[in-house]
Amino acid sequence: MRSREYDQRFRAQALRIRNAGVVLLGLAGVLWAWCAVLILLPYTAEREPDDRYPRECASRLFTEFGTANEGVRNGDWCADERDWPEALAILGLSVPVSAAGAALVTHGSLSRRMSAHAEAMRELDALADARAAREAARTREV
Image (cartoon, rainbow, N blue to C red; front, side, top):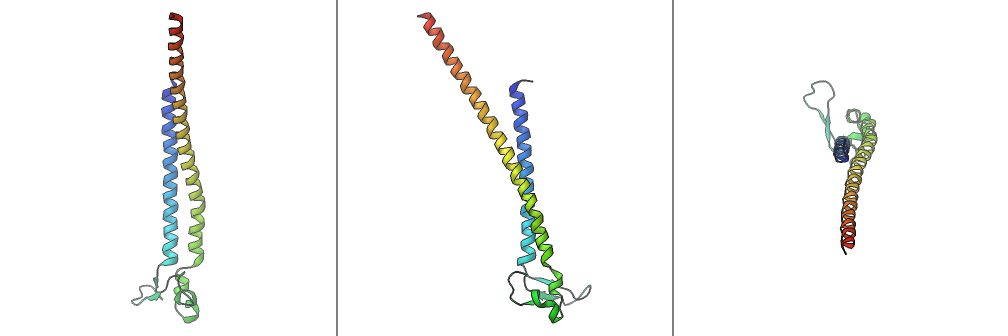
């Protein structure tokens, strides 16, 4: 296998690694969005299955002693519908996914850049060798 073929395969593999990292970062973004929806948006809670008039509940984060926090004491089920551990578990799951995605993107991008740098150095060495050969031939002619 020639060095150019090996370099092309290396760059293709680095691109696949980087793309896998981008996918993982996208997945982490979806998990962050899901957590934000659970915490920031208002929601409804049904008292029984197929409830015709579900209870309107304030968001979990932007409520001060509202339906989301005092629901059990007031007799509605807003506090049980969206619980903090679920949102925090989703947020916690996003941490290793985003760390792995960032590592893969960094590894893939750095591999491609180093490969391009090595190729540029080989081309500069070849140009310098050709220039030195021309100058050596010119000095032999004189």
